[in-house]
Image 1: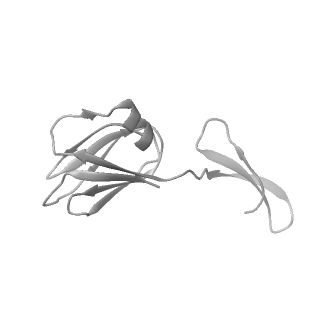
Image 2: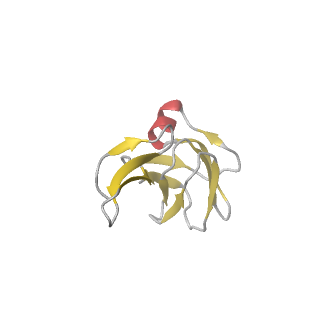
Length: 120
């Protein structure tokens, strides 16, 4: 597709103008691109929700989290990102969110403390 993009209401998509094979103009919704991020954190294992500070929540688009399971990461996001959680072994666990709500990523690790959160 080529052409201009315009916001589509309050959704994380834009309407992109395009031309069909036969030369007809049309618009299609596509996911809006946004800047990624990476923020160092220190989330040791716990059985309780950890509520993040407003500043951190704004930076990583997650309002609360925690590390459980053999280990599980529970979080509530405020924006849809493909989140990557890195533990102290430098292994990464992905959770691609499409909705703003509670999410869980369960995993096993020899050192499960989450040290970095990335969103793309």
